[in-house]
Each structure stands twice: as structure tokens, then as C-alpha cells.
Length: 410
Image 1: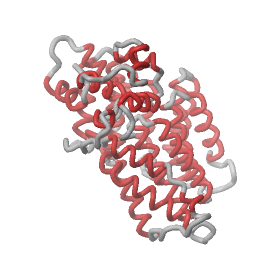
Image 2 (image 1 turned 180 degrees about the vertical axis):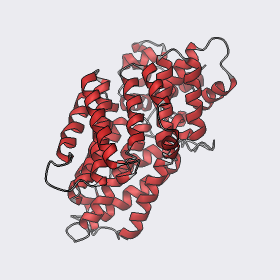
Image 3 (image 1 turned 45 degrees about the vertical axis):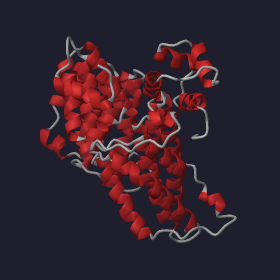
């Protein structure tokens, strides 16, 4: 990429963002012919202001367009930069299993050490330390892949596959938050394959709703609904004669919740109602909020998804009303990532209800709790842009500062 002319780099990133030349041109306020000439090198980009505008539309560090090594962020918010995303991509593009046919695999990490590293990564994710996680994910992916290859065919193979499936899920969820939806789908799909090798159906169930989340982010709501419901039906209590454990209830309940969000996206209110009712029943059977298989499932999370589903249905006022019914103690006990995500949903809900001040406060509340959860997500930029557009006069200082930090034009 560093050796390509700038026009080719623009074309590369435009393709990565799934934009046609016409869509890209419209967002720049240029003609399609102008974009075509730039990408073919017929027209030079000799104004830095234009280059920066292109970088903003493509959501890429301007240094990548200029063929230079981009600077690492040092703003203290923990927001990942494009270098870290590309390092995760490189780790996902490795195929150690094939190479092992021809060369001796590298010395794998000890599974005990890898297990500790994976648990720490989950805690990092759920505490909304996105920048910290993106820095460790490339090595964690390489280590987990190496262990899965090295232990293949041994009695430790299921354990190695289990850890690899978890790392792929971490990568999938992180990439989705950053807007890298195709890459998120790839990681989630690999998580299912690794989970199947581990022999753990609950892990496969968790990996399934990571796939569904990626499908939803790609605009594939109906397949997301179907995959969640199909696997939830297989894990439903009493379907196979196996005991209904707290872990099984948690995974089953989360599949129903994710199914409800997908159903809301396509306007299927009947399915939303039924899936939320099923999840609510599972949460009551569970008896409280827990974090089995890193799901954070329980009565409180059901209420959070009830509000999120209302937002997806365009019922912002109902989402806000649902929020006020949530048990404050249960909500406060949730880990930061889940709470910040909810604040972002609420910001969308307030915006739908025409309450710009409420939407602003929810964005600021989420940013105070977990800056990287708000500042790294494309949907947060969309909400903030809408808030700024609908604010009369000069935006209040806190929201103006957030907009400046996120690079969103007022």
C-alpha cells in the first residue's frame, strides 16, 4: 500500500468501505467523473484540505492516504487507530494450519497462560477498554492460532479450540464496534468452526449470536433473526433431555435477545414481543444477573434489550420509558461496556423522541463512563451529527467538545 499512488489508495479504501464511486462522490460533494480521475491518477490531489475531507469520508487515518506510517493516538481515550485494525486483519489472514503441513509449527504457548490471557481480554472488553484490547488482539490471535494448530489431534485439542473460538469472538465484537463489519463476520464465522471443534455446544451458541450481530451490522437482519432463533430452539430448556444449567439459560436467553433486535430491525413486532418474553422467562429462571460465557445475561440485560428493540422499531419514547423502569442497582452492577452501549441506545431513543438535550446527555454520560465505547463507534458519530444538526444556535460546550474530539463537524 505504501508504494501505491494516492489515487489507488483512495480506490482501495473506498472499496473496503463498500462505497460505489457515485456514493463516494456524493458524500464529497464531487462528481463521479472527478472521483474516477483521482483514482486513475489523471487528476492530482494537491490540496491537503481535500485529502483530509476524503480521509474523513472513508473513516481512515489521513496518513494512510499519504502513504506514511500514521501516528498512534495519544489522547488518553483508548480509541483504537487504523494501525491496530490493520494488525488484527493481518492476524486473521494467517493460515497456520496449512503451513503446518509443510513446516514444523512454532512452539505453542502454554494453554494455561493462554487461558489467563483470554480471560483478561474478556475483562478488558467488558470494561470498554477498546484501545487496550486492539493492541493485544493481534498477538492473542497468533498465539491462539498457533496453539490450535500445535495441539490438533491431541487430548488438549478441544481446550485449544475453545480458547481460539473465544479469541475470534473477541475480535469479531471489537471489529464490529469499529465499523469493520466484513472482517467482524469473518472472525465470527471462524469462531463457530473453532467452537464446533471444541465440542462445547454453548460456546457454539455464543459464537452464533456473534455471527448474527455481524450480519445485522451488514444490513442482513432476516438471516440474523433466523440464525439466532434456530440455535436458540436447539438450546431451549428440556429439548434434549439434558439438565438446564445457568450457563445454558444464559446462552439461550442471549440468543433470544439478539433475535429480538434483529426482528425489530425488520419491523416484526410480534416476533420482538415473543422473543423478549422468552428471554424474560429464561432470566427469571436464572434468578439474577450473571456473566456466564461472558453474556452478562439476566433480568437487567433483558430490560436493556427491550429498550434497544424499541429504538430499532422507531419508538424512542418507549425506549426512554423502559429505561426509567430498570432497576438502578442492577444497572449499576453491569460492566461498563454494557452500560455505555445502553446509553448510546438511549441517545438514539431521545433523538427519535425529539429530545435533543436528552440525546446529548446520554452521549456525554456514555463518554464519561467509557470514552472508547462512544468515540470508536460509527453509530455514535451518526447520533452526534444528528444532535448537532438539530441544535439551535451554538451547541453547549460539553457536546461541542465531544464533537471536536470525535472529529464530527458542528
